[in-house]
Image (cartoon, rainbow, N blue to C red):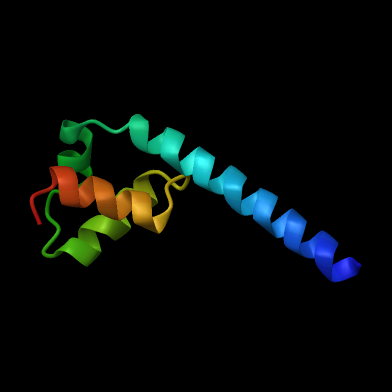
Length: 72
């Protein structure tokens, strides 16, 4: 029984974090992504900088923003 509760709680928490990240990514414009990633020498560094600028973003959403707008 306890494991079932833990799985449900984890699933709800993950869903909530994903929704928060998706909402946060909508706040980013192409210019803000380019600004956050300026000076990055590679894509990995660029993704790290975007995540540092907005802790609400998941790794996947930060990667998508960098891929879409930063030109790596």
